[in-house]
Structure formats: structure tokens, C-alpha cells
Amino acid sequence: MASREHAGPSRKRVGGDNSNNYCGLEAEEAAYIRNIVGDEKDLYLDSDDYEEPFVDSGSEYIPSCDESDEESAESGVEETNVEEKIETSTETNDTLERSNEDAGETDYSRLNLIWTENDFQPMVHIFDDSGSGVKTDSLNENSLEIDYFLNLFTESMAEDIIRETNRYAMQQQEKNWKDVDIGEFFIFIALSMLMTRSKKLDVKEYWSLDPLLHTPVFGKYMSRDRYLQILKNLHFANNEEADPNNRLYKVKNILERVKQRFQSQFYPFQNLVIDESMILFKGRLSFKQYIKTKRHRFGIKLYVLCDCETGIVLDFIVYIGQDTYKMMDNVTGLGLAGCVKPYLNKGHSLFTDNFYSSPSLSMYLFDHKTNSCGTVRANRRHMPNLSEKLKKGDISWRSCNNLLVFKWKDRRDVTMITTMHENKFITLDKIDRLTDENVKKPLCVLEYNEKMGAVDRSDMMISSIDCMRKSVKWYKKLYFHTIDICLLNAHAMWSTKNPVKMSLAKFQLNLIRQIISRFGTARKSKSVSMPDLSRLKDRHFPCLVPETPKSKVPSRRCVVCSHTEQGQKKRKVSRYMCQICDVGLCIVPCFETYHTKSKF
Image (cartoon, rainbow, N blue to C red; front, side, top):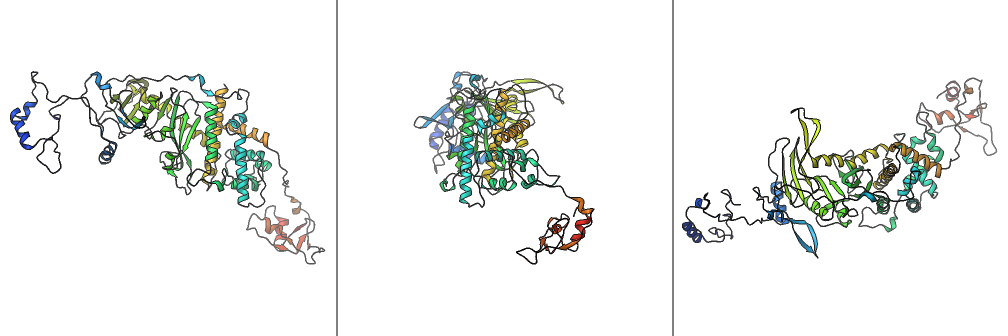
């Protein structure tokens, strides 16, 4: 409705250089009208005998995308059209108009929303949870941990990795290479998982014979050099068939197969959450990211879709820059959150943070029978103007058809958008220490705080058992992270089938033990003999190394120079030896050192 501050048609001059043009009228015409009507203040009579000359038509000017972007860049907050004094007529709810530019498909980046202060009554989509949970009949309460893991990371996937690893080793002309088989590959995975149980600073230390570091299980099932050889040549795609337009070609095949397996073997419960996750990587990489709020600030960024109830990772997208959008079958104007397609039209509830949330996304989800809730940035396109200054505990809101947006003052301003919550407060048992009253929070905020931490909890659980090692190859770190996700999902699926609780760490240890039992064969290794200290008791004398048919002046390596732990080891030969100990020794000073010191 028009007011004294804003009298309907503005007096903004239009018409280029014609400075005397008023609202399309010439200066003489405008003066003539003013003379007829009288003084300008007569236009706003308080008497009921006069009709207001400018009646609100109920429509507002909605800026185009280009104009909106320009205004947003100047002001820092995107301009929206909000009617501060709202009529309670039924016309205010007829607010959503969409442009159909692509052959009848809705473009959610272009909406026409009119926000009101009317009470909001959400229409919540109903979810049927009868089909949620593990979808395969091959897993039950009697299944072992290895059965759940191999159900996600299948032997056929392992065979593909083995084939590409063997191919890559041949392409690199690896010396003394022996093709990896299925048993050896799973032992490699088991030992990689076991390394996180006894952390050492260097991979080689797991095979160390030092009494302080010795862990015999590693050398029992695989030699050190063989493990490092497999790790060096680990590969997942044929380089000769590389796609130059796909930055993820090295791991794309294995990632897609694993994600497809996640979705085919488990159907989520009602609540889903999307959030970001980081894989630590500080090497050189074109799509390396930095997120200061994450545990690993530098690395490969993932967009992760999680089931809130079980914590199972349903899907993830590797961020590779602008090419990320090209690789996705996305919806116009929705961004990366538009990938939640397999779970639309089922009544799910999706929780997102302000990186994803927007009125466009919420409307798209609602139209596809999916509830949504999340924090939102105030300058998102189509957002209402919530510029009021609030005191702690106060709330300001706007509603529009099936959307509710509100700003609530806690320690700072919190802006939320939802299609599934009423605009009401919940009284908590917690007492505010300043007011001595029960704390009150909006229902939307309470449920958001409860559900939103699923991805962070998954990252926290993985961090305690992750099998990733430092590597200059980013795709190897991404592969080992995928193995950790398979382990996490296998544990969550096991928990849904078994009433007895088991920690993820114990589940991992049982899995390692079962993999070694099924695929492992103890290798024959040289026995490590205990040091013979009789050399310190008996009488010993030096002698020349006896002649041989091939040499008349033979020599032997000095055992002290070659095996010393108190000095620098060196290769040194001597013509002298101890006949009783049958070892080569330098006559001075190694002969005396060897027979008088237990450690040299």
C-alpha cells in the first residue's frame, strides 16, 4: 500500500538527456496536473471520503539474474522484494511463477517469490521406511565381518585392480616383478589396515628386526620389498587409454563401481545429509582445496551424502573444479546439491549447510516430494530481506507458499530455510545462566543440530582407523580413503543386522584376522639367530684366511665393520679371521672389539 514515504509511482527521471521528463510526462504537463490537483500533500488525505489514488496491484518488480548479480556485487547483499506491511488477503499466497525455457523444464535459477509474514503451515512429505536397510539376502546375523566388507569391495573389483597393477608394472619394466594374485592383493590390503593399529614413522619399520620396533606378523605374510613393490605399482586404469578430458580417469572406474555398490546394497532411512569432507594431500594437484574449518585443511574435497541414522556413506563427488559440473547430470541452477536424484520422490528429508541451501534448491526438492532444511546465506538469490536488528532470542521470519525463512538471534544471527518445520520454539531443560530461565530454541534449529553432524562423525570414525599412508600420488590416497569408507559402511551394515554392539576398531581387527586367515599363507623366512656370546669367554687367536682353489690370497669381510651399531657401517675386507668363530676380522682393532664387547 502506498505511504507518505513512498507515493506509488516514483519521480525518477527517465528518457536519457530529456531532464524535464517526469514519469513519461513533459514538464508542462506535470505542472498542469499539479495545478489541477493542488498541493502535493493533498494526495494523502486521512479522511475516508477520498480514495487512495495509487492502489497496490499485488505485483512487484523482480530483477533479472544479471541485474540481481550486479546489485549484489555492489551492496554485498542480494536485493529482494519484500513487502513490509502485508495484507492478509488470500492473494499473497499466489507467489510462485516459474520460467519454462528449456522445452517445458523448470529452471529453478529463475523464480518469482513474494515473501509474507503469514503463519507458516508446512506440508511434510511422508516417508515409508519399510524398504530401508540392507537390501541383500546374502547377509544375516551369522555373516562374518569379511562377508560385509567383500559385499561392498568385491573380488571382481580387486581382480580389475590386480590386472591394471600388473599391466602398469610391465609398462614401467619393473625389475624382478612377479604378477600379483588375488590372495596376495588382499593380504596387501590387510597389512595396510593393520599398519594403523601400530603406528610407525616409516613403512620399512614394520619389517624392522629392532626389538623396539619388531612386529613379526608383517614379515610372516609378506616381505618388505614385495609390499613396497606392490605399493609402488598400484594402479587402477590403463594409461594407454587415458581420457585427457577427465581428471579422475585414473580412479574413475573403481570409484563409480564402489558408489554403485553402496547404493545397491543399502537403502537409507528418512533423514539424509550433504556436507563436505577432506582427504589430506599437500602435494601438487590442480584441484587441491583449502577449508580452514576441517581437520585436514588442505587436500582433495569431497561432497558426501550420508544416511543420518546409520552414518553410511551413500554417495560422494570428488571436486575437480568447474569440470565437476560437466561430469554431473545436474539440474539447472541447483549446484552440486542437485546430484541427490536416486532418492527423490520418496519423502526423504535432506539437511544441508549454507554452502548448498537456497530457495531454488528447496523448491526443487519440495516439487520432487523431498523435505529440506538447512542454514542459508542471506545474500542467496530469491532470499527475503531480513535486515532487522534483533536482540538475543528474537526471531524474524518470512514465508512463501511452501518455504519458511527466518533469522534467529543466538550468540550471532542464524538464518535458516525449511519446508518441513513450523515456526515455533521448543523449551529445553537447559537453564540460561544469565536469565535463570529455560533455554528456548526454534524447532528447525534443534533438528538441524541433531542431524547435520553425520558426515563429520563419519570423518571422525575413519580418522581413527584410516589406512592411508603418505604418498606423492593423489589417486592412491583417494583409493585408500575409499577402502576406509567401505570398512565404515560394512561396520554400519553389520550393526543394523546384529543387536550386539561392536566398535569400529574391533570390527576392523576381526576383518584383518579373517582376511589373513582366508587369503594368507605364512611365508618361509630366514630364522634370526640369537647372538653367540661364547666369543667373549673362550680363548681366540687370529689366523690367515685359508687359501682356496680360486684364490691364493683370499680375504673375508670384517664382521665388525659391516655390522657395527656404534659407528658408521662400511664394507671392509681383511686377510685375517678367527678360526673358532669363523668370521673375518680386521686385526686391529676389530679382533679385540669382537671378542671383548657384547655390542659393537
